[in-house]
Image (cartoon, rainbow, N blue to C red; front, side, top):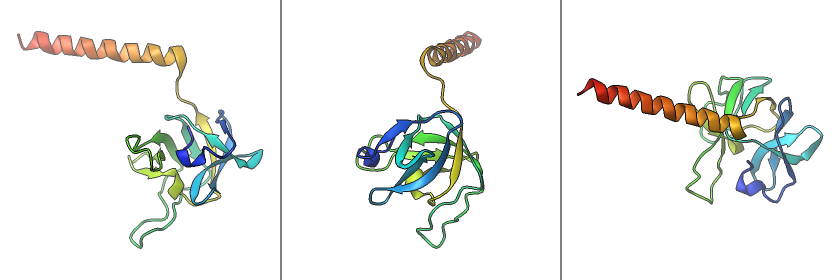
Length: 145
């Protein structure tokens, strides 16, 4: 997915193995650019796993903000979906910290490691989780009788 502020920019979906670069698009919105064309945004699906060449860095907006996040891996997420007029694209780091993509420093290199499950495999996984959840509820209900 690409943030609403990137809808006027040419874009394409991410592929496993893509070498992406954080880039400033339009007036103040950052996203990932394609290796073949820096003016093309690459849109990620929530759950896409990324590996950065170096520890991820963010722009310093406040003196108490740490510039270096301290991780080289992240999972793409979409946040604040209830608010249409704000940025949604974010990265979740191994410590649980979530940082908006538009707040990252420009020029960082990342590789797409894995795309999220889609289609039949995602449906099968959801059905399996539902079955496990139901089984756990049934066991718990039997235990209290």
